[in-house]
Length: 147
Image 1: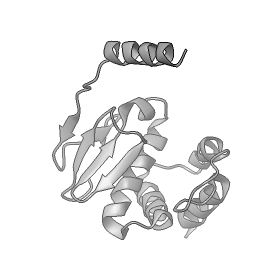
Image 2: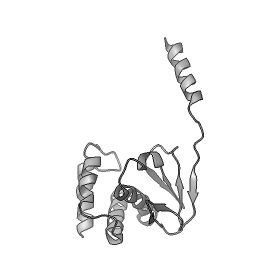
Image 3: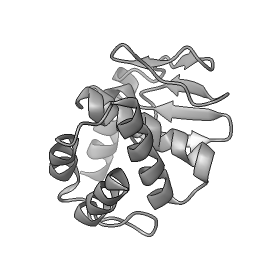
Image 4: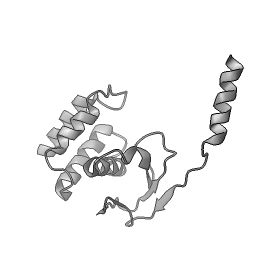
């Protein structure tokens, strides 16, 4: 039985595409749903091979188009801004959230009703060692938005 499961997994893996094309956007050339998104001198890389919605590394922001395609424009912009926030404030997740929310507020990306969608998307997120549980995280972002 174990050999059959392994053979099935191997067959499925060999049929699935193994190389998805990443798109690279030099600084100043990236946009989300027609909205220009600039993060200083950072290059955006859009790749479905990312195991998360987004990730920041020095000089780069990686975004997963498969995850983003299921979101509203406001939520897509939040994740891009959150990853950009890491380039501005460092690795602190709360600070990156706050920076993203204030930047999005100032850019007109996040009307107040965006928080209803955030609460819906984060409501069951348990958090981890770097992120507060979802509802707490949204409450913290609402505070940042108001201040």
